[in-house]
Length: 389
Ligand SMILES: *Cc1c(COP(=O)(O)O)cnc(C)c1O
Image (cartoon, rainbow, N blue to C red; front, side, top):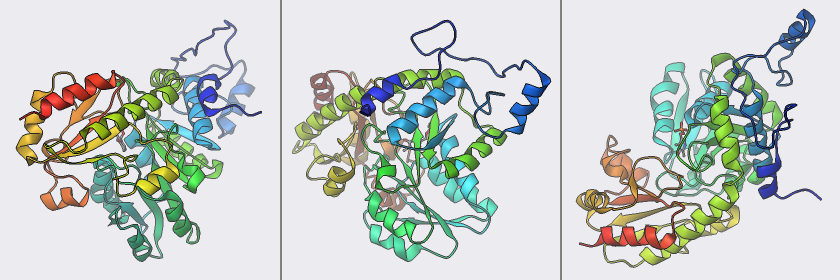
């Protein structure tokens, strides 16, 4: 009988050393030694990951993290990177070239937006955006030179969703790669490859670490797609540090129980905030009022750990709310054991125009809460007292 993913997140491990250590050791070594000139020559002749040469190429601790993510995403292969952005940029650089076109949801992470609009054009790679609430527009944006469709579901911070299998149908018939940033859901909640995505990307910095300690990223998919990505990372250097891989591989052992608690608390808090007089609306994928609730039920196991709500008082109320919080942290990170509140309009998205913010669902009074692992009553109590006039 095959084991459950919860078990695989704990029991997937690289071969242990002769010391018979129980927990995962960390291989903080930049290179590896050989017993003979012949062995060394053979290692360099082989482009696979089978022999460790140098930690920019491969490292046993990074490999354990990588293998765990692959098992959890039901992926053939994967490559870990130093950050989530390194994973995204490496994916673009590996599969796009001069003259190519990429279609992306307009609601993507800020730095992804910057790569698409400021950097890719330098290499003659163009893009078109579509609004996640109008996925039917995608087919009309496809050109002969379109090579990739890129989405984030749920999106940050708008919590918009797209139907991954519907997009996969469009891509498959036209040979377009479907790439999904699965950062908000994690493999414990959603496995995009099962719905036809070609590549899945994570910022491991968020829920995968889960305790706000280290940066990391990873891309998983079919072996034939990961091999060129691996060579890109190996040669250009955005590799994951073995120390970060050690932190992250231990984090994965608690991913499932953490995501269950994040989601249960988030749903409780989302329900409790609905109808509050200071709030115009509450958004959470597993609330029946979410415009794409049916999609959430189809492809997600739970609603994840992020909720958003819109303060009736707009921009000044957003600042006021943050200033009144007593426990929740004011920081832009998310997916931490500590609950976090942020106000995108005055911080992460303050440089966008009002029209650009509207396009990605950021209203002046939008508050994003990353629901942590504290007791849900304490999180809710802090939010409620901060909402008082
Ligand atoms: C944070 C984040 C990223 C970038 O990851 P880093 O690890 O910070 O480089 C990409 N996508 C989403 C959805 C994110 O939230």
